[in-house]
Length: 352
Image (cartoon, rainbow, N blue to C red; front, top):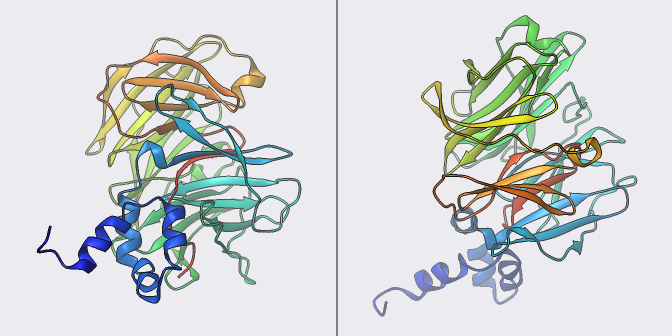
């Protein structure tokens, strides 16, 4: 250690600080401010922040927006802290569409505008433009947030408008939108198909595309973020005699899917993607019956060999799983109504 340059030692120490402490450290001196503002520092600090102690749950209801830690020793929510939105809104009408490395892509429902927002630093960036880019319509559009090989944070926006599909990419680096081609089956343009938010894993964004009735078509659309090419792969071979929902999860850069099927009782299987094929990892026992009002607030986490079914009030029940331990929590189902997110506290900025 005595042979290491002081700059290296300081860098190593500061990249391990909590995000809010990094923000305070910028005021120490000009040299630290410059160091902590470099893209290399932000990237390494972010990579070291993906642990359960830095994870938070953001919950939005009609009256408040709150952030809670996840307590690792009992896998439940900790005390809440009220968060004030740094942008104008109406009655908390904010939908969370995608999240990555501490950034949230959100929509203001009264104006349809898209924003990038870091709730830890409170910084945000509006993505809407005068030429109608950056406006989101629920149940028609799909959003994916990703980082390309040049460390540029980007937003993929798939827009369905009156049978016409347009695909646009926003670049944080150049602060603009551009159109890219998308060749797919014509039927996916129909509002009868539900597109999930994109899940970023291994240089690819993945979307589930599911037909909105029993026995309908279910596929996965893949977007290579560097070549900007799309392709279609099959859905896991799950029974189609009930409702089908596939929720994608990036666990240590390996794509998994929690595929749920059924009607009154849901059965959930965990699959992992190897190449272009799905391999079943395990089958969970049927979920106990849950009231509709409670189900609409539900989300799930998987960590340390257990699968937790949660509501905004706390843990509902636990299912033991034969899985290797993880050092952080992975959300395995979206909050219904896009009113919540699990995010990591980082200093990643929504703008350059």
